Amino acid sequence: MAAGKSGSFKMLETCKPPPSKKPRKERNQGKSLGTSSSTEVMQREIWKEFPEDLFEAVIARLPVATFFRFRSVCQKWNSVLDSQSFSQHCAQAPQANPWFYTITCENVNSGAMYDPSLKKWHYPTLSYLPTKAIVLPVASSGGLLCFLDICHRNFYVCNPLTQSFKELPPRSVKVWSRVAVGMTLNSNAASGGYKILWVCCDGEHEVYDSLKNSWTRPGSMPSCIKLPLSLNFRSQAVSLGGTLYFMRSDPEGIVSYNMVTGVWKQSIIPAPHHLSDHTLAECEGRIILVGLLKKNAATCVCIWELQKMTLLWKEVDRMPNIWCLDLYGKHVRMTCLGNSGLLMLALRSRQMNRLVTYNVASREWLKVPGCMVPRGRKRQWIACGAAFNPCLTATA
Figure (cartoon, one colour):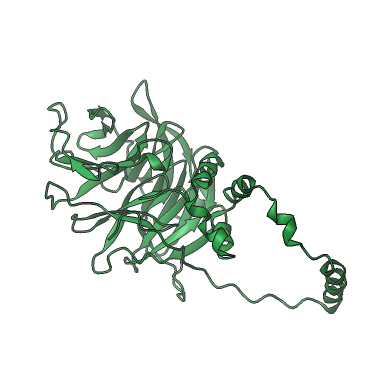
């Protein structure tokens, strides 16, 4: 498969009901208004002198779904994505809320994307991913997603919006055990490349550099870090300032790797009591812990923040009590997606299937509409996924 391959963005939308018929009075009013405005025909000459730079600046600030509808107007507008100046305008535009790419339990070979701004699900067609193997998202950075097949053999990187795609070269170390994966950008601009780190419980690890298109072995893990690592594979790695943070369970705490200096560190941090299904997140430079707090028949979703001075978790928020009552007496499991400011929590049991987003900065809890595959009626259970920034210019 060719690196950097891009294509059109194809999404299957949820079906909308037909528009309701308006009263005759409103239809007659619309006709009278349309008659007066129909004489004002837009002249082509008006737009010939419109500044190209201003044109791209406006487009760069459109919602993602609107932009792709806009591209279908003509060939010139369709080619704007390849413009260098358009990439600069996109970098200057305000960053949108992250989207969530999810894999459901019933349909592991295709994904569903959720746009929290429009509260809408999209069902992309990622035709470039292998169809004979189960490939799951394991990390993300900027507008890129990193996928790994369940046999832990091959890595893939793509932009799920523009379908820019790359299959990474084979690793120099053959590892058949489960690995934890982290991903960072070399700079704020997607053109600066990215790095990917995989690490397994025995301490073996490698780093991929997209600029060199190769894997390297930085060296062995220092003796001060206890092996095996006992990594928490439910928790995705958190990236802060070029450093990746992984959660471990024995001893409880965090191991980190600086992607610039190549230095490993370990912090012993006791976990809160009665905690389960926990995962790391981050917001504005702070490391966050999200998990289920279970005691007797009561269950609640709690948020903790790591105190840098004491290296202890401090509870900062909880799910609203009225929502926690719905979890009472149920054997609830939780999957947390996203680790940068906005989180999606998938709560499920035999009697319940609920999706919730949590904004770490504003401490706002919102319910998410159920994920239903096209032409399907049953709500899907979210098995795994990752959050990514909807960036039109990020290339694999």
